Image (tube, rainbow, N blue to C red; front, side, top):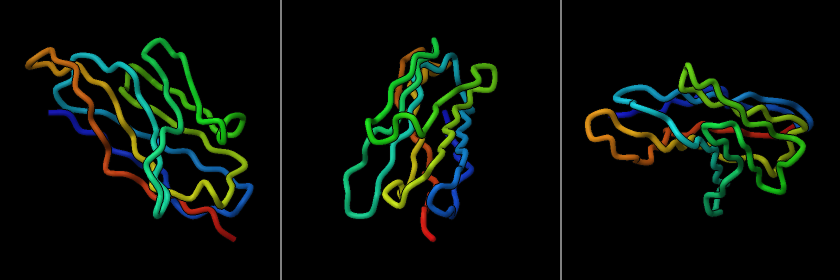
Length: 121
């Protein structure tokens, strides 16, 4: 099957920066759109950023100008560079990808396990 593994979360002071990474591995024929979602305590999961296989990007309004999503297609990896972080960015960040699985050639959605980002002084 397919696994998504995230890294890069942690504790950072307001105004600081973090870079998240997520690598897909396993029975991958092709990776299409990749996304970062986040879920704050007591709130619904929300879509923070999307990048297509062609490199087109889209962002949640509250992160525009501060977050940058990018990808390395050769490594099946997506990144989220987060700058000028605010306490309200505190959440578990999840990677999500649409993957054409080798065995079936069906496109399925896969999730990472999540990585905690805490913005606090």
